[in-house]
Length: 349
Image (cartoon, rainbow, N blue to C red; front, side, top):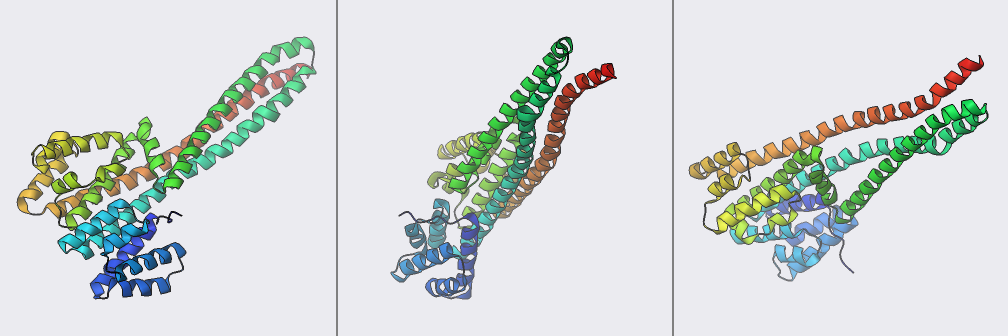
């Protein structure tokens, strides 16, 4: 049976605790034993026990993590680099920050999709009630009047029904696509399905790029903290495998190709357009001045903040827009039904 993979929050917690264990001078096995005793999370306890058993058998931490099958491949690779460079504690702290940010972005993505979907679902129910019950009821009422009156208003009722039916089908299709995307994201526990959807939709492409760059620049920070240059990372790491935005992935691959051909990493970034010119030139200066790591951290922080702000902004715009648009649609359908009824009432009065 395949071991249950850890969530981002669990990976973040475990990496942080392992960094604290190493910082205190305690052995990994002893520290994990104490951690298991204090945790109520069964999956986390099981992972700790498995790692502890492997470490007791003389396996390095990275191999112990890999053998459990519970950790992301990127986290295991970074721990292995940290062991080779002697900077394991720094790498673990960097990984804790990285997965904390990824978990926060994943939760914000879920919120940005879930809240509008709840509103959309409620409005869809109202449209279904109109199409299935209200409009046919008005049709029955109008059919009881004089045939000349009935023929006059029947066209209006038919138009209202057809409009409601089309809108209902469109809304149900949107909900179906969203549900499939949510299920795929839940299965992978990464939000990848939602991110790919964001990269396709015209009004969310900018957010998709910011999310991809926030992830990527933070991953580079972790790599640098392990004592590995970004150029070496490109040559020996499959970091591009979790880039969900097609445009950013294409630029990254172009940058990677230039580095393989011998171009310096800062120049490759500028030539490929992988980062905006301002950030690319800052990195080049950072290379020259020896402050490369701090420049990467600032860029990573800027993209993380921009991604979070964009997600909050789009949520603040989409929810009122859904309410207004669907409210106008429902109002228009009801108005199409009420005007003939008011005309009939005025004639009868």
